[in-house]
Image (cartoon, rainbow, N blue to C red; front, top):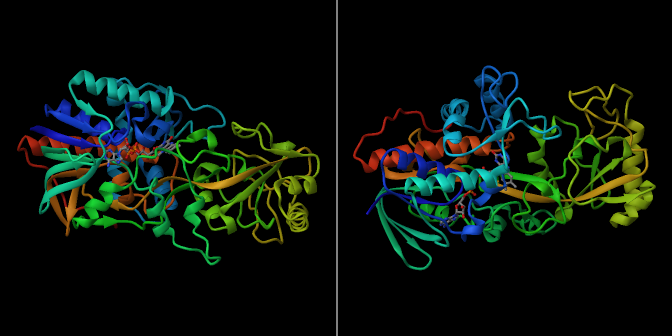
Length: 473
Ligand SMILES: Cc1cc2nc3c(=O)[nH]c(=O)nc-3n(C[C@H](O)[C@H](O)[C@H](O)COP(=O)(O)OP(=O)(O)OC[C@H]3O[C@@H](n4cnc5c(N)ncnc54)[C@H](O)[C@@H]3O)c2cc1C
């Protein structure tokens, strides 16, 4: 019998498997996907957010614990567990040495990459290279990996893990288990249930595109909920970005993101603006735009810019719709020209002169219109004009299993002795809503490593150190 069974094959699962193996445990990993699609959403990532008190290799200046914490507090509106969040933040300051020892390489942030040179360490070769490095290291250390092995159900004895049963009916026992099988973002039926119908009778989730893997169906989240595990978070909350409406249903990845929202205006299918496009820096706001578009009729929006801002943002892979005049642009997009022009004329007239500077919260703002644009408000008047249709792109869901600092799954507030959880399966403990770029990998790396350490210790009969610091405060 293996000491540790790890279910999942992304960053959190790999961190858990490597830590458990390094602690001397025998480890089997079960990954739902075929080998060529291994690595879940983690294969699409680019960076992780790291605390540091002084410049560190690829990171400039300092990003102290308190600033990281305040950023998280702000984006989540307080829906976070401070104790667990600070654990993750501190772990982010010293995990890179360990990551390097398993073959991960870092590079400085590129200009245009969401102003992240200070806060985020970029993976050389992206998430795919990180995943491949971890798999290579895991295999070298003797971790056994089975692909195309989706786990369907869990056999428990009260709060104790006994075995995992695969879709194919195979039964895997182990002394301990780490579940790191992602959220339920790829499960359209569950998303539909979570989002319900809007006032127009539409099912918004029917128009969501899934930015990452198709394999995160939430089967084990549902399974654990049925078994009575404690959960945290709202099923409709998640990381949801406005992406190119032409993106494929799955695995469109990072290149489908449209990053010019704060440099122009966004209208809905009636040609009307609906939110302050310049509310804050794009890295702090990009993750609310998926939700904003999801709340619009038909779940579609259109980002409109002009020539002046070309070169100021990372251009999308595919060119937008272009026109020499704004009415022509509206017509090409199939939008009602009259109301589109009313919105654009009102916006252009409301832009007050200021000193445009996209690297600070500048003083270019509108006056006298609703919604206001509070920064970077320049009239859209320099042809050619460009438009990108936007759809909600779901990255990952936040409904999670509740954990303590050992990553143990909890049943009626009692910690399981041998069942642990990491990554998206528990991210909702610190992300009740909102997002700040790179924190998904910080959570998965910190808790993957904790879960692997705990699972190995439990398998080896060592007791786990545990305080009373769980639940939100
Ligand atoms: C396009 C994109 C870009 C992103 N960029 C970043 C970024 O730059 N920085 C950042 O911090 N975060 C980023 N994220 C978020 C990040 O991907 C996640 O926070 C993180 O990867 C979660 O890791 P995980 O191991 O929990 O899940 P995943 O990496 O999704 O792994 C889940 C694994 O479980 C497997 N699985 C699912 N169900 C089962 C089952 N029943 N049985 C067995 N295996 C199963 C899946 O196949 C998959 O391998 C991005 C996400 C996307 C989609």
